[in-house]
Image 1 (tube, rainbow, N blue to C red):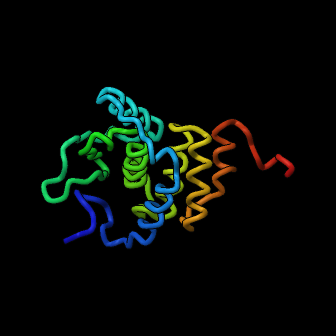
Image 2: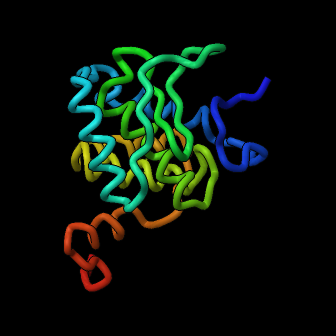
Length: 165
């Protein structure tokens, strides 16, 4: 039986840091007390993230998979089967998969996904959550693709290439 749900691109790519990402999330306070959103708020957040990254809005499914009831994402759907999954941290995590699957390079929980996840947390959960997740990633040795502070600085309108440290 595969270790993934749904139809994902490149299922043969080894998901080498999935456990590290999950371990990092357990270190973040925003994962310990997530607030359940209304279905309308969930749909709005999914649409906003999709629009921000220029990808089609995935189908939202709030029932579980027949074999294993778990949250997961594919390029075209986001599955959030439990009330706790209807929270911003879950949505940001699963939408990072959707964005990664759509824009690539596809690596499931690898450096490309982790970079996307950091950006989405920064944009939709704020700087404090971003910093907390980045530190947790560093603690659990999750690799990401770029200098996140530089990229986030550019997104905020600050070109850090000209900043003297």
